[in-house]
Length: 114
Image (tube, rainbow, N blue to C red):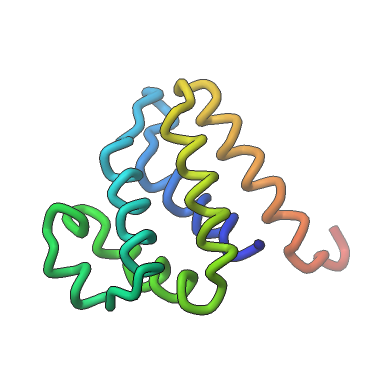
């Protein structure tokens, strides 16, 4: 589950402008399509060739592929998170990003002397 939240955070922060409150839901939807394709057995090269899926998210394809192969349940959880994210208004998207970051901070090793 940690890896799914980590990738969610990466996707959400990559496609959301926190300063102006804008989100590229079209690119988040492409990530969802790529995950579904990987879960159905497509390879990264097959998905890369489909420009309607891969254009704009090329840098995420390897992470999405690894998650779908190593942790299919985590990939389904990531799909659910991204679906909630796409349907949410911008203020809620910002809260979801903050929540994901808080979950990730819990998993980081504690620093000594802080």
